[in-house]
Length: 352
Image (cartoon, rainbow, N blue to C red; front, side, top):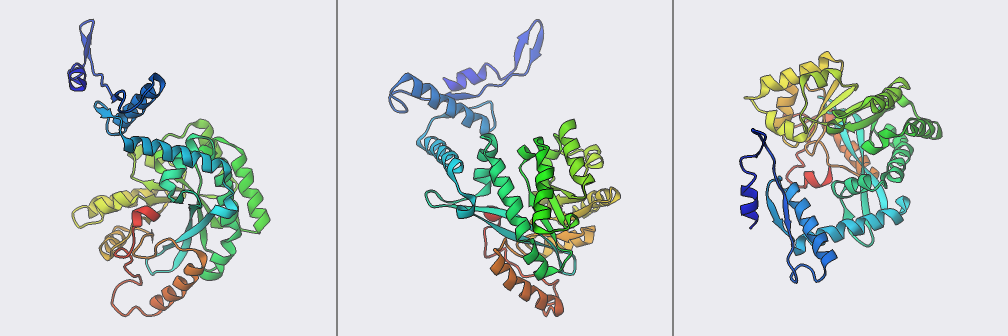
């Protein structure tokens, strides 16, 4: 039945002599297998329809127990987010960012959540839920304050010019108060704002409206550094690269995976050169092999981040890593740049 309905849309629809491309997404729930009353049946069919949209649109999806489990999981995360005490359940890990010689020039603060009820919940799972339900402000503000409170320790490990990169939710950019809060935290912890970099996702930066653009400009005018994270994850035109208001561009791991090879080296060089022409520093993310590091270096990339260098670490672990990294820089014995290959030991996509 679903196939027959979808077939009706295969060639578009004709209206007054013109054809219009129209697609359909169908969700199916059946009584009594999937529900025993009308309200539940419609709700489950609706959930299956959104599953069809998620899978690529113009298709059908049958309600399943797995889909119900996913809905329950989302609801439980929402409930936990409303009640969570960040000081008890949240903590930060730090992922070093290094130059071509292996010297740490900055660290990206990454949020981790362990719920006594639900266990480890990854940012990929809870951040979209928090943003869609308006629960992210207290999380964002906790991250900003905690990261700044720990910045002194990073500077002790890597030097006074160490940059602290903080990701903020796209939802926070709608509020002018985010700029004032950053300044309040700076004063509270006695930090130099020139060592704070605010990271925004590339997919969000593409959609910046006038008001949001002004909010970012206010942050820059006050002296904060702006970084565009996950660059290349969306659909970015050359004009948008030129128009970006940013100090740093971070190449997305998927882009690095696709371009960090001999065949694509000219394109990678051209992209990095364009960013440099706009006075932007370029960071290669997802550097998990020496081959990627060599290609990015050859293309002119300024800084690097990834599991070849280090996985995200809590401060005590980071201190141990810093000592080992200093020893490697002092005398790498294997002829490689001073990094270890962590990619064989970890699940990079689940932690970064």
